[in-house]
Image: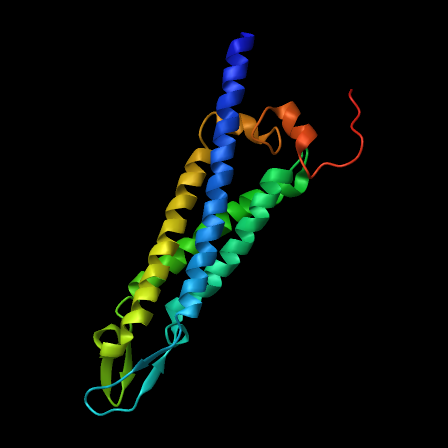
Length: 204
């Protein structure tokens, strides 16, 4: 292969690596945002028009929303570990080779299942004084319902970003870069500049 073709291939692989890393960071941020939005939008006083008592609604009243907070938080933590391993792995880094596939399998399961469960519970109703009350049909529920719905769509966006990251990761050219270590430049530059490699390096 000509030298020019090698440089072009290396540049393409490096670009795909950078896109994958950027998407992973986006997934991390969106997962944290989804969990935070759901958890902080937790207070809403609902007035029952037919004379029932006041009821304070929180995300904890709905199992799927609790699962979204927990799953998104765990998924974000796992994605942070995956980002660290992606940046800091060495060519013969056994921990990265073992953990990355596991993390890449676990994070989508958590995010996709949490998003699906939250959308399935989107009507947000509860039982009071023998009747089924829709939270979002009452006058005081606007802020809570809006924040919950935003959290659901942010979680969905995290899932979409994760899907795109997986597509980029398994793109034909990107596999050649994966073996080279963590950097957006050439292999030699990434080995020298990576903050995860310390000490002297001998050439063989």
